[in-house]
Amino acid sequence: MSLYFEDLDVGDQYEAGAYTIDADEIVSFAEQFDPQPFHTDPEAAADSMFGGLVASGLHTLSLSVRLFVTGFVNAGPELRNMGGLGMDDLQWHEPVRPGDTLRIEVEVVETTPSESREDRGYVEFQRRTYTETDHVLTVHSYNIVRRRGVDTDPEDTDA
Amino acid sequence: MSLYFEDLDVGDQYEAGAYTIDADEIVSFAEQFDPQPFHTDPEAAADSMFGGLVASGLHTLSLSVRLFVTGFVNAGPELRNMGGLGMDDLQWHEPVRPGDTLRIEVEVVETTPSESREDRGYVEFQRRTYTETDHVLTVHSYNIVRRRGVDTDPEDTDA
Image (spheres, chains in turn red, blue):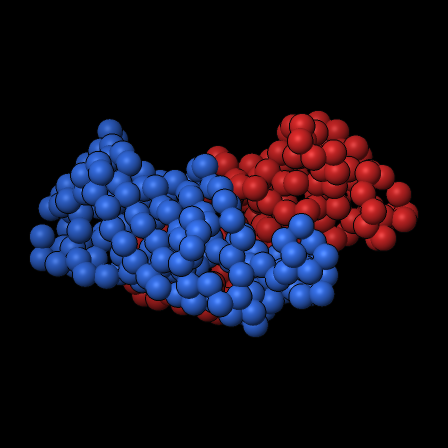
């Protein structure tokens, strides 16, 4: 079973989680993609405005995308996501620290059928990421979602 | 030597690169953070709207952050970045494919001294990411940048 464009209504909410982050992966991610001292060096981080090691905001975003894909897009019923167009209004409200457990809430904000291509529509999601104690990240994403029954994709035979 | 808030003027431009991406790391990154078939499975990708394996947009963003940090923030003179507040207007213009070499251009769009904290200011950057042939990503970032000579950080003795 799949979730098509027509199955998403403004105001629909989904939840996914959880993922617990540790210090080693904070450092390892940052060494690859965001090698700044407050993400890679606990001593330097203690002297930063964060007062201790914090995950790269990009890492928090990446884990929230992971939860979006594994806990929503790929979870049953599978969202027929064709790709992403962009993101907007990304805010890091609070830092994420070693031992924090992340979960997300996803809300459908707007749905717009494509005017030029009848096989797809555009969906704006607001995605909110939380630890046990804090709302740490908000972002809006714009996804291309397949419409029901207007293509010849053999995987759509369940439609 | 360091680059402080006062050293950044609207219109200043910086460049950084290059980074060549291969199929293995496209799949490996996507398996961790964005496990959708057009990022993890070359055969499924061939049947997608991309016509072949493409990097997760999150991966393209992550590599553009890497180039921003290694080729600009951490490059001499080091940008005294205190952290990030958020991002806006993230657009994936074209997909990134195995073998593509990424580079970025960074432009200072706006600088705003903090009204409540004299040790810092806010800087909006437009960051553009390119392959050899395409403009693949644009994003605006909001960074907190230390002001010159108004703190007691011992690392600031070069100020």
